[in-house]
Length: 121
Image (cartoon, helix red, strand yellow):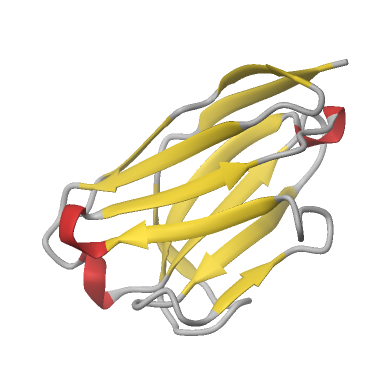
């Protein structure tokens, strides 16, 4: 069974950086597009970024475009999210998820447990 485990969250100052990782314990990571989502306190789930199987089709939400970078290492079943120029509004629980399709906006079938990112002023 697929299991996604995120790490790398924590406390950062505004303007700082963090890098999130998501390791897939299954054997099919390279066959699936992956995405990052986040949920801020009192708000709904927000799509943050998406990468297809080869990392050649990549999408970002407008709120993170130019600051966050998604990447994947298929040899090591790992998805990354490099977050730079962090803002207080980036404070949220971040989740990685496996996509059921190949395009931004599709459904996701497996989710990690989430990692907390807190950005202080």
